[in-house]
Length: 345
Image (cartoon, rainbow, N blue to C red; front, side, top):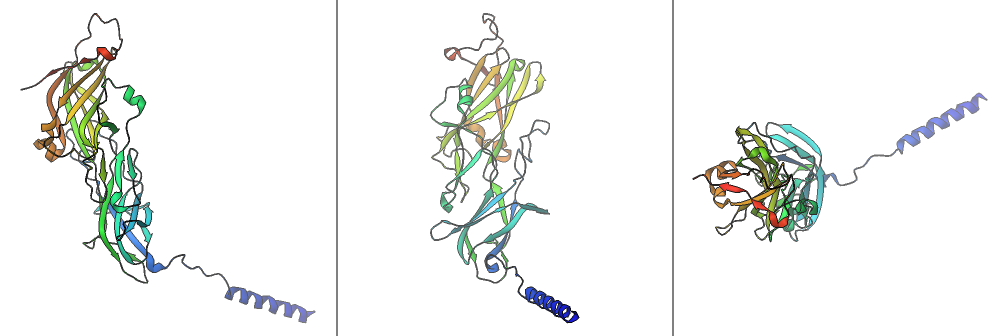
């Protein structure tokens, strides 16, 4: 009996040794030499959004750091997508916030494009081809369009874009290697993404401000899209940009500024490009009023060039309610009236 137990014990020990010697070994799913670390800093110094405010006491536009960045490698020969990765991990150092992760790609020559992937109104199209990737915004909703007093023009009326942080390089070489390396730009540094969207602060004074219920702006002469590989606007895409406006505190009895910070891919170039803004106002007694101002020269003013401030000299006057009107009845389409506009000389 003791001999049988001894034999059983030895058998169990031997089987355990054999099992341990043939246990599973974890192996990488990919060749580690094709794995590359990538870090992307985000330049969040944005005029009129995070810095450079005209008036610190006014309501500021909403802003939050990106949640996720897309890093895409495109084959240099045909410009087609070859590899991609979404960066969710975040860090911070003296240079600012950065996003990091790993992308898998074999040795070769690539173009690199990275941008944030969590925008609300900014939409990306043609992302499978390096030179074709574009950012744009959609047209305003039918409900919103129908609420406007202003008749729509020939341009599409679109929402303001969200800030889109982009970095692009058209010559990135990956060498063969056995270890994880780090992808860097042509200067040997990590990548840095900056926004292709600009933010302008706009204000105009209003008399009869106590009658004001709401106001929106419609700005023509803007580009509705931009190409990401070079950050340039598309000059053949003319749009009207829609934005809401805020009413500030009264600066005098029944006088106040209405203001906003609007975002745009940029104004269309050329001296022949006319920039006009239509203010669409609703009053507390139900009137719908509009007026259109030419602001072409304002975009070349020192305030606009240096600070991206559009400070209008005109004064919009909201007239008192006509006593012949019976109550707060909004005029019909054929009865819209223009706001009286006083020009300060």
